[in-house]
Image (cartoon, rainbow over all chains, first blue to last red; front, side, top):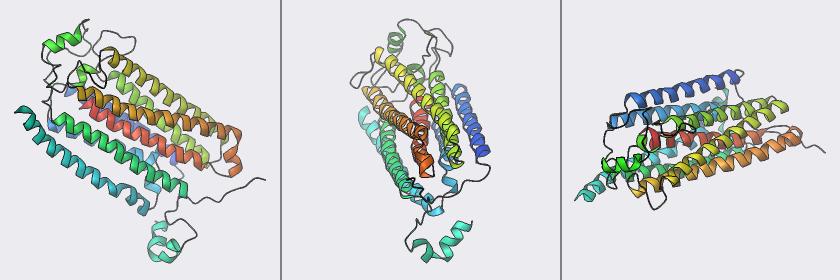
Length: 109
Length: 251
């Protein structure tokens, strides 16, 4: 006997396929921008350069999560359950990098 | 916005039981929660990398080798003598990961890892196309896209094996690193290794799902949600790679 389940899910838009390909081109373009910037800024070791690359990484992450992982079509409640706890990661980054500055000083002397 | 209207105006209907308040199945919600916990694990590993890196002196600007230049046989020793590869100084990733298969002896920073990034992004696209075909119940299309995704994942793992072999052959391990601080090699192996383990389990899951699709399991069930759930995992692996690529290679 075949058992057909009823499934609860949020619908995808009708133009999903074109959204997927558009996202692919965006990700490809952003990666190419990464590579070009890498060679242009090869000899610089500034914090601004690091922030720029992290920013581009976050933009890519946004596209992957929203379209590929279907997040932008889910209910807001689910979106916040997943995104809001990331504030702790931000805190950890701030904490670790601040402490690293002190450890760096102790390593020197 | 019909969904959110229901959520605010008729909360009794949304939270009254008998259906998912998030409009997703139990399995998918749990996959999201798992991915959140996995995101924390990877975040802590990458933050550890950031911490350790910031406790070392930054790398020297490279005035020695230009891209596409020929590398000498004793490149690592030369760099050690020039003070670029010393244990007190974090090495520039540009000088460490500069090989490309079949182009031995040429300084090609970032090229190989960019190729790996493209492979992973493309396999993510084929995965999401498999999910889209699943919504239309197009069995044959799901099969084809799953095969492409599996090939992409396997290709990525092959590239990573090549990268590791190179790094190990040059003398790097969890407890030694001719390029600089030992922690650099240890963190590289742990973080890319943990990511690679995720890719490997993703490929295995994809194969299992592919076989189920071929056997018509989801056709009988009436939906291809299993492809979606594994798809979420696969995109997460791609997502993590974006940050591994940024922190280990770009910066």
